[in-house]
Structures are given as structure tokens and as C-alpha cells.
Length: 464
Image 1: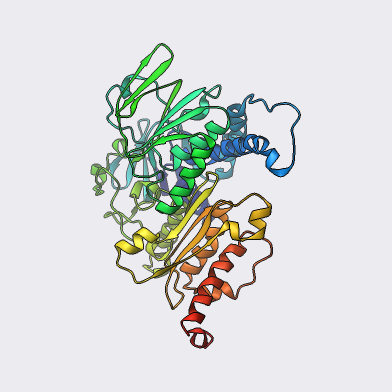
Image 2: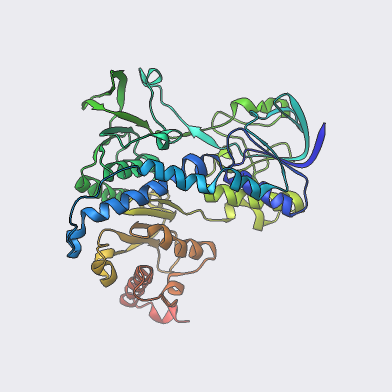
């Protein structure tokens, strides 16, 4: 039996960080991936979806040229955007990516890893010993128990980018991040899109006011969505899908299911290793250790944050903790705030508490909000839709920030940094922002907060 300092099961974002860092630290590492290095994010998730959204944005830009005093002679024809997406992804994956992990032993596409005991895993009938084991198997699409769904060839994020052409009609079940991103991309590329969504508003995990802005944009673009609605049954006759709801039956050429994620647990045989888990995730402490001290679960599989950047950060922290054996606060997962973003147009980004969450927690706060339309750069570049909203108080503490609008995913980093390092609204105000960057909207929020303090007579105390 071959022995390793570190075995990493799953080489998505978290696993790649663990394997890469492990070899750089001089460890003898085995990386196991039953599909392709990069996991769902790089191969069939974050990266291809953003490539497709970019193509769709370029097509949409030609549709609104008249808003900028321009005219296109002729029409822009949608030819092979999905093939272009696949080319973009293939340039970043496959053998070129595998070479980056040449210092590790790799088991790729040999089947799933199964625990034999707490130090031994088996792949394709061969056993491997690991002094330290990281589980980073991630999640895969959760398919709801809808009548008839299992009998039809539905799409998920796993196979949607394998389509040969843009469907004329597309129905999407689910209005979360994947659902709305794909809805806008396919709609802008020519599909008539209908979303059936169980939540009260699209992107239910996000601020309701931000969701309302996105819904208004979708309505203007002709994307049809039904909130508070569930699918009763699905069937397929000839080449058409029939999706039955209480609002009626929708007929489409393709059906995309985007109803959430569930963990890759079944094949691991965690009981053999004595690792505690439930149907939703593997149980871990603040350092992402399981109850078996040399086995860690990092990324989506521990259920803490289903976000690529969080998974990568967890893998880094956990490997540092495992190597040092120090229970330092610096390595504690919960000491780090986690931003998130949805890459529609307008984008939605969030860090910390939303306004709704702050109310539920009974926090004493007030909201400072600045709309994009109040800023000259936004007005002159056609980026009028959106706002920056910060949850704060008279001390200037940043409890959370919501941004909806162009470059929201970039602008949220400033508020993430502020929360991470306990910076106040006054710190944001006193930081010079390049004009006329959109990030100046962050500074404008801080200025509006400061003027509120002036009217309250608090300026002197803020200046020390």
C-alpha cells in the first residue's frame, strides 16, 4: 500500500488549493478526482456560465446601440455561442491544468474514493494510506421530486453547456443564482425564457430590494418569471416539454432544473472512517476538522458556504492549521467575512447582513443608500440601474452592504475589507477613490452617512 502525507479527495477549487499548497510545502500528496480537475465550478459552473454571460452581453449591447447614438447596418446573427463557451473552458482545463499539479500523484477518472478505515481510502480496487486526509468532494445538482421529471431528459448546469444550439423556448425551474444567470444569458441569445420559482422573489437569498431591481430588468428584457409557484408535473411529447403548474402548462424546447445543490457523500463510506455527517453535510469545527482529527472537510461538502472563493479559503486555512497544529484565531473559518455575487446584469453583490437579516436580528441600525443614477459616470455610460446600500449606525460600523448594479461584484470588495478589518464609514470617506470610477459610489455612501452625523451634531466626536 502506497503511503502519503496528504490525500485529497476531490479536486475542485478547495481540492486544487490543498494539493497545490501541499506539494509546495514539501508534502507527498495524492489527489483523487473521479471526473476532471477543476470540479463543477471550472468545468460546468462558474467559469462557463460567466463566459456565456459575456457573449450574451455582447449580443445585448448591439440591441441597445441606439441608446448611445449608434446604428448597426444589418443584424447580429447568433451562430455558435455554446461552442465558443466550450473552447474557452477547454483552454483552461484538461492537460494544461493537470500539468500545474505535476508534483503530486493524481488519480483522475478512476472512480470514486471510498474509506476503508480512518487512514485508508480505496480507488478502483487499490488502497492508499494518508497521514492527513482532506475531503473536498463538493456538491452536485439537487433534483426535486417532481412527477415525471425523472422520465425526461432535463438539463442542469452539468450538461447545459453541451447543447448544440440555443433553444427557441426554455423553461427554468428555480430562480436562484444559476437560474437567473442562465435565464438572462439564454434570453439575450434568442430564447424565450420562463422561470418557475417557489420563492417570494427571485434570488431568495439576497436582499429583497435588490431582487426587485433584477426582476424589473428581467421584465423589460422579456424574461417571464412566476414567483411563489411550484411545478406539479413534467412530461415530454415528441420534441416538446410540458411543465404543468397552477399558472398553466408551459411548453418549451428545453427544460433546465436549477433548484439547489446537495453534497457528494454516498460513495465515501464515511462510517468506515468514523466521520460524523448528516444528509446535508459533513460535520466540522471552526478549522474544518471532522471529529476524526486528521480528516478535514473543506468547501461545499461541509455546508458552511456554497461558494468557490470560500472553499479555496477554507482549504488554505485548514492546511495551515493541519501543518502547524495551532488552533490560532487567524485560522478560524468564522473570523473571515464572505462576500457573494450574482453575475446578471445588473449584478447583485452582498457581504454581511442584508437589511432584512438585520431586522430579524433586532440590530439597532439605519440604512444609507445611494442610487447609481445620482452619479455622473453611471448616467453617461448607461449604468443607471442600481444602488449601494449599507447597514450601519452612528458609530459608522459596517454591518453589511448590498450592491446591485454594474460592477457590483468588484465594488463589494471594499466593504468586505472594511468589515474584515473593522474599518468604519469615516475610513471609507477619508479614502480617496479614483474619479470617475464606479467605486466612488462607495465613497458617496460614506459621505451621505457623514452628513447624517453632522445633522445629529456628531461631527466633532467623529474627528477625535
